[in-house]
Amino acid sequence: MALDIDGTLIKWLEGVGTTYEEISSPVYDAVHLALDAGAHVVLASGRSPHAMTTVADMLDLNADGREAREGAWVVASNGAVVFRYPPLEVVHEETFDAAPAVAAILEHQPTALVAVEERGVGYRVNGPFPAGELTGELITTEVADLVAGPVSRVIIRDPNATADDFVALAERLGLQGTDYVVGWTAWLDLAPVGVSKASGVQYVAAELGIEAADVLAIGDGRNDIEMLQWAGRGVAMGQAIDVVKEAADAVTGTVQEEGAAIELNRWFGDGRRAPSSTRARPA
Image (tube, rainbow, N blue to C red; front, side):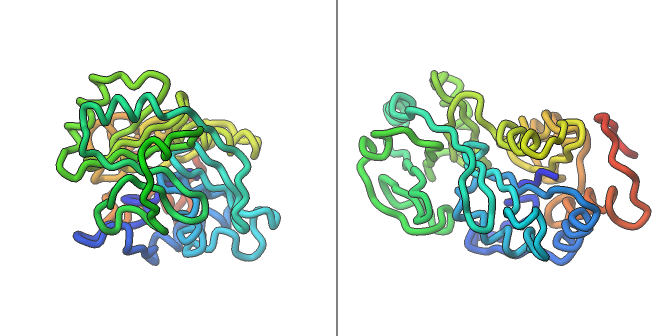
């Protein structure tokens, strides 16, 4: 089970952002029904590793010695980092030279904010991000120093622009040598070519000896599209935009309606059915 976090497992509260984190009882119970049935539950998010361990703890993913004491699998940074937890042990990481793409973006969007993860600490940034959008310590750094060496992911943010502005900008620039995904706002994630949540989850599945046909993925954002397409069953949250829903095999309830729990209970709750190895769409 590959599960997105924000907008899938965790609700966003107006004006609070990522500073508010709570797993609802229906979601917690549904995840544990899957765990009790022997499923591997993998968190897959655009978050950096240090911002995902608290969610793994809230879900008790490694409770009672699950995962043979080696820790739960977690896919972070939109697939660029895969780690086991606890303890946090990075087992796979993809990096790239982001300097050319960042320079091209700033030429057209000179007021944009830039951030690069500082592992285990927070982020190095060229200026203050809106409150609640980044976790950990924020270390002000010149852009040239941010991308002086290989990085796993770069965040570009402009509070004065829109998501549509960033979609148009990325398409116009092409951003050679990188892959990218635009978030709900004017938020652009740059990643190594070929890296996405799908590639990260695929890495975990290979380590577990699991085929794509036996993977259920749930998400709500543009950065979930490849994962929903790759998984044997990809499910979009009810509040997802149309392009995400179109990439999925099915649509569940919104995050406010506990859509993730609804989907998991379909397979692991009372009256459950065995998950199909085909991309079927249950009624």
